[in-house]
Image (cartoon, rainbow, N blue to C red; front, side, top):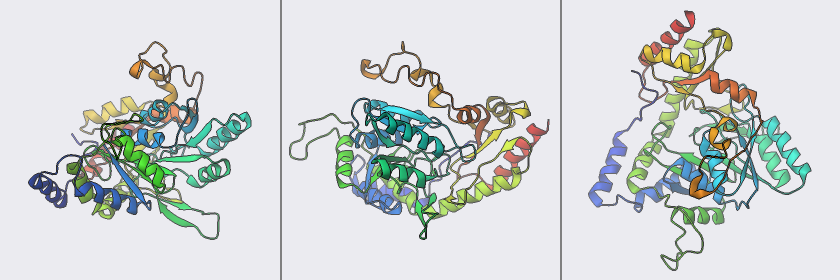
Length: 397
């Protein structure tokens, strides 16, 4: 079976982990944590990095940094992982959803504009932030979102969990366009370093920001809100979201060859496209002129006229020795947000009855018809050829 993804661990990661073991620095203190934070922040063009235990924790901490009050709203895509909506809800906010762009599968910026303008007309001051989520390696079209944020004093929480090293051309309609790395475009940004990401710490995440107060808040939330002058004394509640030195050691070793990793992922994406383009009934990933995508996962969307949905197609590929994963199911279709009787964390009834009657046709279509193919760094041209041959064979029958 060709797996969807496997991490590629190099000699430097092993060397750094062995150093942790030899010296005993295996918990949430040690030189690798700070070095990984500093170097990843600098790579993304941000001043401060705050390592977290995973991407979900990083999202929760990032939203916690913007000071939401109960009922405050954050615009986000329906097509994403549930961690995004969960982070907003846990911090007392309300997610406001938009559909996906049919080409990039990222959030539809025209719908963002519509939702922002509708909230401004409402005039209750509840809209506080926009959470763009870069999808499967391709950036969101950020310029319009940054313009909305500046015009209406909104925070940007940039979810860059799937776009390590991807770039976006800012100011492309100005005299001075500039390529910037994703994760360096918002007021605060979030990364995941899960095992299937471009660089990994096994489990792990990071919050990035240029705001020193926000960085201090994220560090506090990460460490149970201990007071610097008095340990075991708390004026607010936090979390144990700490990353270990062992994990940071892996991440630092991975970061030292990030350009090699990006080049390989871009080669893989182009290799898939060369072999699959022109097949009737198959939508492939794009790379817009304003984006340098990294093909975190190589997604495909089946046309309904193939007579197959993603579940059926995945089963046929599995029978031929190819593992896949389905696309996200939109937040507006998640039972946890629709069923008032379900228990909620801590006995709170958060997120119940949300999105009632809302429809997002692009997200609904790609959720049912989309899946991603094996995309791990360990895969070779032979693997890609085999996967593509199996895709073609199934669609031919």
